[in-house]
Length: 185
Image (tube, rainbow, N blue to C red; front, side, top):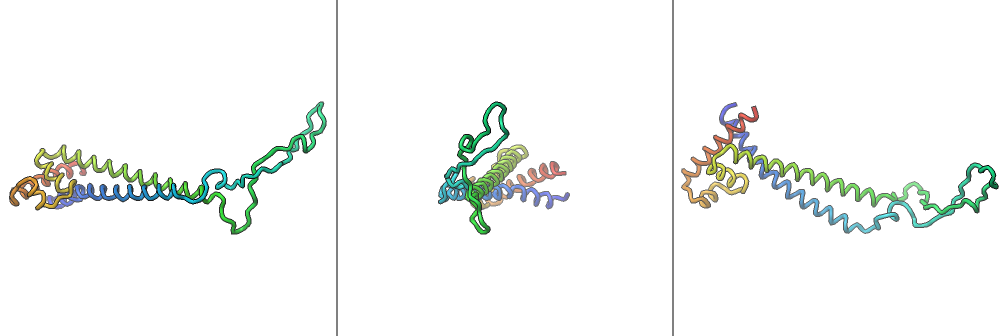
């Protein structure tokens, strides 16, 4: 792998940090929106939304005759059971609210997984920078790619001249790209 390709791959790797941070922000805002949708859902959640009307109906249970006892009569064995009405074609799904909430919860879980993957990527990139570069080089890469400063802002912040800044930044990119290139190969 030549030097420019290694630098491009290293630059892409470092820029993926900002992409991961932005994606995590998006996921957190989506989770907040989904949680708001869950709490503001306007149908009752519970037994009434799962198809049960709240009514009990008497149902007769018939069974085998037990030896030594008279044959059971319907009044002896009638029990109350929950009544779920029959639905006709085109009737609203009685479990629609429940299914909706389950889909919202599944979306929240997917966003939380993405946030977790993004956080792991960010920690890995920070650890790579700290491991592969000396402290001054690590500071230049972190200010540029993790904090998102422009070259001019970073020069002013650390009080470097333009030539000194780019010399330090270039050496940091060389070191990081050579280490990353050896890991990827």
